[in-house]
Length: 166
Image 1 (cartoon, rainbow, N blue to C red):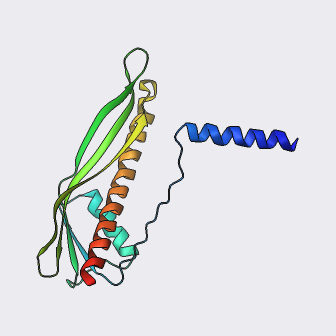
Image 2: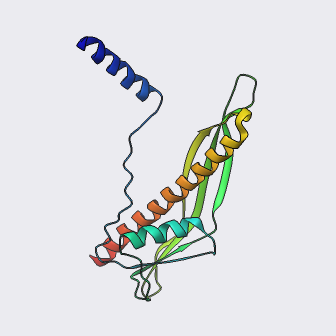
Image 3: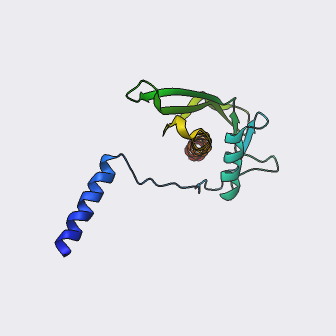
């Protein structure tokens, strides 16, 4: 009986790893070591909103104009393309890529990091028979990509802030 459970557990773990499932850490906290960061962007930029939220949670968002770094976030570009088709040639997997230009300046207005394109991508399976569910899946993926992009920008700012203070 115990041997059957072990074999079943092994088979399941191999099956999950073969399907591409991965366990990933998702840290929303930043170690800014007292660095205060300001965020500038276009109106209604969800990446900037996610970044502000992360910086607020880590108590690193400057609200009174005493920021050490200023992050400027450009317009969000979204690309959607087919990455796999089914046996009759219809799209079965889409890849969405979100990208934006990010510029980081110091308190004196000098450029610490020139305009850099940062992006995040993700795939989702598509089934035209359940269009409403697929639309929700796509929107959910876009929201996750926005949060991941905001986290990547925050990590970059944290690293640059630490290198400036040394």
